[in-house]
Length: 324
Image (cartoon, rainbow, N blue to C red; front, side, top):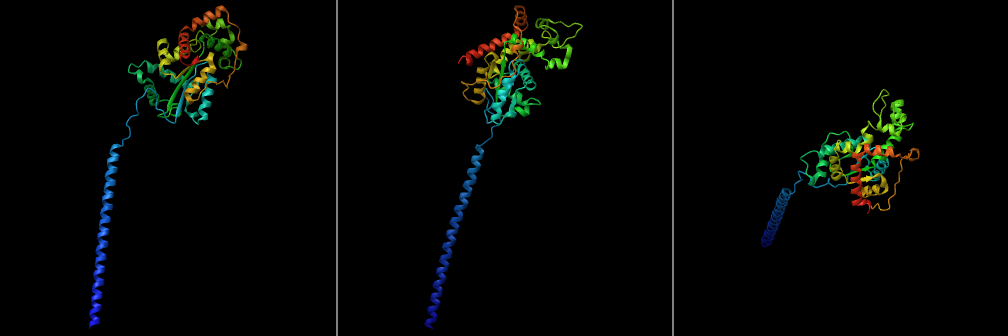
């Protein structure tokens, strides 16, 4: 009997220890679970509070120039007979080196259409000159343009260039270029190509007659007056405003190396101090006769509006980078 009682005491003691252990584990589990639930609640609350303060901007910040990103777009307004092919090849090479050749508008077909948008934009009374570049950029991005989606991606850094040549020299160059046997004028018009049938003086003063000659300098605005027509629609003041506000660099053909150096600096940020021209496109100087006094006077008369724009570009270049 005593042994049975001892066994019962041991069993009772064991049950008490097991019950205590179970209670202890329950308490530990409860406390741990409570802490975990509280932690989850805190995390959820913090996430909600944080997300309420993070908002995507509804509009890009306003600035005087397009947004700077890892994309750069280049617009080069390419006039005729100004060494434009040399410049466009150089700019295309820079962009190709940066794997962004598709973001260029540097040929006649693309760039001259965009340049016409410049003059229309400047005529808009709603423009704000403190943010004029940004407004022009937004106009181009929003415009319906076959080329726009290719060369001007949204939120790119837009660099705008052109180069101008002495207008009388450009006019003379146009004449001799059209006389080339393999040139566009002779291929298209044959014996009706005015430059092939007339002297330079005759070409500049030709009036329509029974011969019905084509592309005479006296008849083609692209020969005598391309700067003022493209940039100003014939209005000198509009053209001057365009080159003052919408271009990063207006180069000068007579200072080609220095012009390309400045364009290089603007588009890539590199120092172009020791820059030299890599491409020299066909030079026809050897085939040109020297100016006569009469020819020069007539050429200056025909190109007087373009000369105002050219001389302003030369003045601005001299003041900002040409003589630096």
